[in-house]
Structure formats: C-alpha cells, structure tokens
Amino acid sequence: MPDRKASTANKEPRVDPARPVDPKAAELRAASNPLTRLGKALGPGLITGASDDDPSGIGTYAQAGAQYGFATLWTTLAMLPMQTAVQYICARIGLVTGKGLAGVLREHYPRALYPAVLALVVANTLNAGADIGAIAAAINLLVPIEARVLIVPVGLAIIALQVVGSYRIIEKVFKWLALALLAYIGAALFARPDVLKVLSGTLVPTIRLDPAYIGIVVALLGTTISPYLFFWQASQEVEEQMSIGRRQLRQRQGASRFELKYALWDTIAGMVFSEIVAYFIILTTGATLFVAGKHDVVSATDAAQALRPLAGDASALLLAVGLIGAGVLAVPVLTGSAAYGVSEAFGWRSGLNRKLTGARQFYAVIIAATLVGMAINFLGINPITALVLSAVLNGLIAAPLLILIMLVSNDRSAMGERTNGRLLNILGWVTAIVMSVASVGLILTTIFG
Image (tube, rainbow, N blue to C red):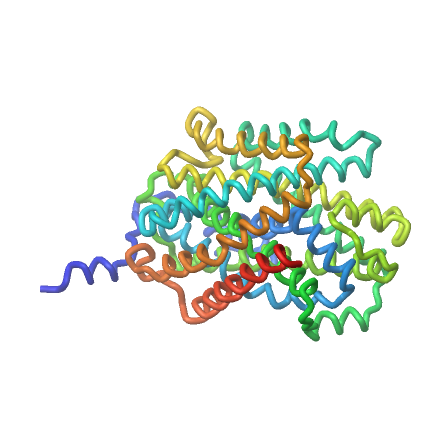
C-alpha cells in the first residue's frame, strides 16, 4: 500500500473543474501581437512594481543621485532579477494556494506569522504617514496651499477610494497613476546628463567601503525589496481570481502553466517599470543636484524644489507630478497590505472586492492605519525619522520573511507540483542572503552612520 502521507505531499492542489473561466486567459490566447498580449497581461505585477516607487523610495533614489551622482545607477540592474524573482514567487503562492501570504503562513508557519504582521503594520503605518505628508508637500509645489492643510483631505480621499470604490475601479485608477511615474523619464531629459558618465555608472559597479556609501546601497535594497510588497502581490492575485467569480477557496486553488506564465509577464513588466523609474530619478538628481554640489537632499520634495533653478520649471513640475501619483498609489498599497496581513492572520474576511459591511475588520485596519499615518504629520515627528524607523523595521522582517516565503514556495503540501524551479530557487535564496546582509548593514549604518 502506498504511503498516504507521501501521496498527499506530492499531490498538486486540485483544480475545481466547475470554477469560472478566466476571461483574461482567453483574451491572451486570442491575441496574436506580443505587445497586445503583454498589455492584456498587466495587472497586480504592474501595480506592485509602480507602488514600489513610493515617495520614501523616490526620496532614497534622489539622495543616492544627489550624494553620489551616477555611482549607484548599477544597483538598479543588480536588483532587478532579485526583485522579480521574489515578487513572482509571491504571485505563485497566491495563484496556487488561493490565499494571501499571511493566510498561507498561518496554516504552515503560525509561530512566525504574528511578529511579522505586527512589524509590518507598524512599518507600513509610519511609511504611509510619511507618504501622505510627501503628497501634500508635492501639491504645495504646484498650488499655494500650505502642506499641513492638505494632509487631511489627501488622507480622506485615499480612504474613500479604497472603501467606496470597487476592485475594478481601484485597479484602473492604480494603472493610470502608474503612468504618472513616467514623468521622471521626462525630468531626466530636461536634466541633460553626460551620456558617457551615465553609461559608466550603469555598467561598471562602484564599490566603496565608507559607511555612508554602504548605507545608501543598503537603503536602496531596503526600499526596493520591501515586505509590504510580498503581502500585496499574493493578495492581489487572489483578488484577481475573486473578481472573475472564484469566490470559494476550492475554486481558486491550483494554477495552470498558462496562468503562471502570464503572471510572470505581468511581474517582469512591473519590476522593470519600477527599476526604470528608480534609474531615472538617480540619473536626474545625479545630473543636476550632484553636479551643482547640492548633496544635502533629504526627501523627494526637497529634490523637486532644488531642481527648479538647475533644470528649469518643467523638470521640477514633472518630479512633483510623479511624486503625487506615486504617493496616491503607494499609500493604499501600504495600508491595504497591512489590512490583508492582519485579516488573514486572524481569519477575518478580507478583500477590496468586498463591500464595507462584508469585511468590516479589513476596512477598519485600512482606515485606522491611514488615520494614524495622517496624525503622525501633526505630532511633530520628523518625517525622515519616520521613514528611517519604517526602513529599519522592514529590514528586520524582510530577511526572515523571505526565508519563510522560500520554504512555503518549496513545500509540496502547499504548492503541490508548483514548487519553485532551479533558477527561481537560486534567485530567491540569493535574495534572502543579500537581504540578510543588508538588514545587518541597515541596522549598523542607522546606529553608527
């Protein structure tokens, strides 16, 4: 008689034959033009990639460019395969298990879940508060209204978008907001960079052992490979399935090779988009602020203000517009990923597909995180301090969470036959090791830098 345990462990999650068909899959199969097919595949991966360039990330990229010119451009190429691998693994977990990341961890690794979710909520709330402040400051660059006056309207508008809007409306709004980030490419063109120096900074890694440079490289890693994106990616894949009628868990479990393939296209597109934006922010500030000797930029809005006399009003305007779009996109992702984590950890109903009455605790976490984030801006807490604290917390939970993600994604009891392949495992474990080193570096540079 075969070993029942072994049989269960090797069994792929059964695909319910009666589950609703994914219309996107049919459209993708029918599309003959590769670009058309890619456009139809875009969804959670693109939104995740765009939300990675939130105001705190933009501020980090601006600091890198202002302090070191083009010397850190190479990091965008180095981080792309790691970032893509991690987010695709999270997408696979959501697609195959039919659950968000916290829901899967609750089932398989419950002891590690609650500390991670607690740290996630604290870090995301601090980050959301700093981003709301950045949105208000960016609007102030365009209209003569004091930033503090704008914080409450901005925060309430973001809450309304999540609570009142349907998932499809939110998805469409997010996709359009992602386009605002293209403004940074335009800003780079106005900056008139030295092409040879740009190519050198891009293709030849600059390695320095001074603590400040190590600190900025670690910060770039930390702001790019962030825990809130892990939770968001997996949960959005679940949301996508629920939006086409797969309401029951049994209907969502399992994923075809084709579904995983277009999830990979979507993820690659989102991560490439994310790194292109990061690249051009570093390029713009390196070509202007660094050259002009303005190395003390501490936020994205500082960068936008400093660009005006150097690169003209158009460049500063584009940076401000991109910052507003990035912030309005990122804050709901930050508060939403916190809500997914908490709700799945405690077994509450969750999802932007649900109405407020059908997921009260989920929306309560979103509202509470946004309101606390808004309040941070009135408590005299330095926004840069808030971002540093959130970065340290993200650094502390990123490495162990990546290890858990790698364990889950290779666990046949969770993933069936859809465990990671060799390349995905190599990239995933390398990323976990790099982030472990980066976490230690982030803590040391924060304490001693």
